[in-house]
Amino acid sequence: MSRHAWREVKRQLRESGAAGVVAIVLLAVAGVWGGGFWTLHRWAERELLARGQATTVVAVARGPAEAAALHQRLAARFPAVRATVLAPRAVQDELARWFPELATVLLTLDEKNFPPLLQAEVAPGDEHAVAAWLRGQPETTLVESSHAWQARMEKAASRVLAAGFALVASLLLGCAVVVLLVVRLLVLAHADEITILRLIGAHDGDIRRPYLISGALLGAAGGALGAAALGAARFALRGALPGLTVDGWLLALLPVAGAVTAAAGAAIGLASLPREP
Amino acid sequence: MITCEHITKSYNGRPAVRGITTRVERGEFVYLTGPSGAGKSTFLRLLYRAELPDSGVIIVNGVDLAQLRRRDVAEFRRHLGVVFQDFKLLRRRTVAENVTFVLSLLNFPEREQQRRAYLVLKQMGLQHRMHAYPDELSGGEQQRVAIARALVLQPDLILADEPSGNLDPERSHELLELLKTINYQGTTVVVATHDRGLIEAHPARTLFLDHGSVVADAWVTTT
Image (cartoon, rainbow over all chains, first blue to last red; front, side, top):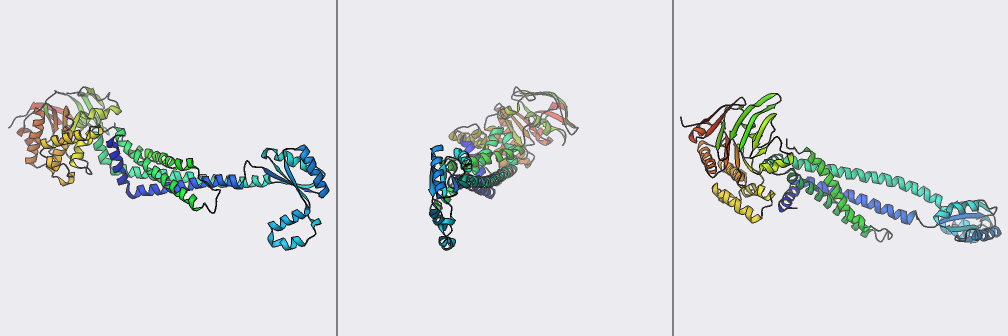
């Protein structure tokens, strides 16, 4: 870009004033929200939904002997599945650990009141087959899979995700509108100047380019600010959420997305620029 | 330099220019005169292609303006110098920036821009006001800056629309002297003015316009 164009861009940025600052802040907020939302979504997928990791299928057996027989048949039928049998006493202890408020009551009960469990870790693709096979065995009274819980979580997460990204899209649209208005204000403020520039031989591109670049720079600044805020938030949360990581590409993308959004807004804002007859 | 054949231009059905046919040769100094509403400004706007004629042919500096593509208009205007009654200076820029603006658009080196600005402002007697803003100048000085800006690219043709309209008589005569000097150096000059006294004081070929038509084309002499 020529020195002249840079000078014009600097002038536009100076003159964008408070409206320009508002555009930067809005883009930063959109960046933090969008980037933060994406980061949390990825973290939930990895840590909470355990997508792609092994699924647990639990079968309640009629008795300890049935549980042992079931274990053997399961190993023969699905050699890749890692299964363990939890004896009634272990189930009782486990429940007492999960519900400490009820531990006193649970531990006073006879262990015969607790069924033995067969707990199988299966690959996500095998979950249906293993659960169906276990349900078909006479030794089992109940079969549950963590997949159902995951499916419910995923359904809820996908709704939250859709709502979050709709909000991000609205914010970005808002940013584009703000930049559009900033550019339109600049164009209005420079209407006389633009007329003069045309009369002394400025090309349409010479006139439009500084506005477009200024808009894109406002957007890039907003995106960069958002990326910095996101990085800072990640740093602040490193103790509380050690698994939370912000992707490098996401930090790099925010200024680019900001620039593109703002440049689009500026381009629409420039539509009001009068054309040569 | 300028060839016009049967050009017409109307605004909302009201004719502003009616069938003007005329020629201006290279190196000529020509006045356009007539009462207000005679079509002087419209005719000039047609010459620097701020407007397109409804019909007719306008050839300026070898360019047929009706055939000129929109993207080539800027290039065409760079060979013209246009001076306006209201100066049309860039208020937020200094005198030097006003003059060098078109040079910077053309990516002239900074030193060359400053050299040319200094020379042309010196010619206008304004070299000491290079860093002033237009609002700090008198009307006469602003008009001279506008002329300096028109001259800085050494155009083949200068079109001046009521350049003395905002000046007192003394400054108006100085301005005409300046335009005459520029004309002597080989630049074609077309000046629209309704000031008959000015034309008589600086006689030249004069096109008289009335109701959008050329009613006379004569050399005005002192009466």
